Length: 501
Image 1: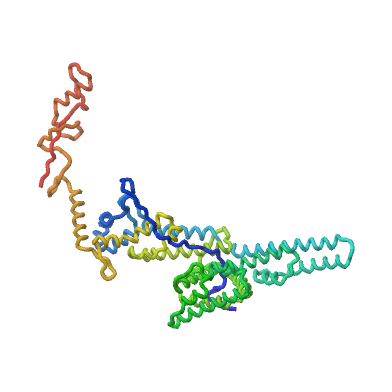
Image 2: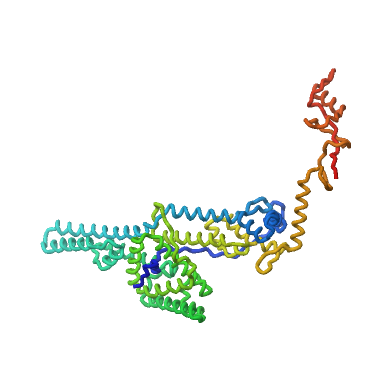
């Protein structure tokens, strides 16, 4: 029996429902004639470069400008916001906090204990019926006494079951049930626990593990032994025969991994999540489930192979967070499958959060699993990540930036574009009477007549246009003399605005 209490590493205790990750389907496109109603091209290089111009002028470095744009987000040319990494990370942390504050792992233990308690109560009812038949039947006194003694003896056996889960399981495995229903419930519980026990490491293999013949079970053990052998070969610098392994045991892996690394990484992630669940339990809960795990694994004779596989995977993938633990503080208890699903979600949250935190350029976002990001953050955030990953590529294709030794630099074309944009912005903001040549579209208080009029407003020069003023007064009063003027009747002449240069 292999235990490492110092670091609480119990790789064989893994319970989970299978969590299928959706594979990314190939993109499909349809085309139609442009009619002016479709959404335009969300991002183009000119718009994007305009969005980052202020950052470029402030930082003087295109890499810093890209990082700031990734952090804060931006707006596409259709006016839609592209969510920034900072907001995404905050939402991930909020979801993480919600899980930990709402749930606790006590249900992992309670769920098994409740199921065993139901089995025992069903058996006790059958024993009570047996004892009543012995007391109430007329006839053979010896038969009546035998039934009463049997019921009393079996009740005593149930009274003497140990309080721990593993002890109860072992005691009931050796118990001769009186109730067929209780026996059936107990066997179903054992089958369920065995399947859940194997689920996280072997995924879909676990579904049929209870229907395996002795020959099939031996083949499973041979597969795990050969998998361990390949890991040892790799550690010694040898190249394992992965293709031969898949030819012999490919039916165990319906996900059809293409490389040994792909297969091992998935298994290591599952085992690491199971270990994280154990790390997050109280010492009493961890001991109960570890002992139960050992009890069930001994029945399957897979303890050694699983222990060896977990050790090898831990050495090969130390970055999987084997020592990570979570502080569950809520009131909602999780059963075993729910707990493993929740551990998987927490692991994905941490993984995505770390990746976003470490993304120093848009190209790093290409490593994000967009399908999983969509599940965690929603469609809009996933779309923002996909588009954000293309920012640098778009600017490179338009000749505005170039990659030199891993760092982006502005091209001469981009520098000229920044200068032209800065001058345009500068002249737009200049006062009308300051130095320079200005193209004006407004009129003002100059001396040259513009041959047009306007209603008088407070502050205007009183260049009264008498004819239109009188016409306004007559139209207002309906005619007659004398014509009485009102300030609203005043019409003044427009003049061209003067500019000093």
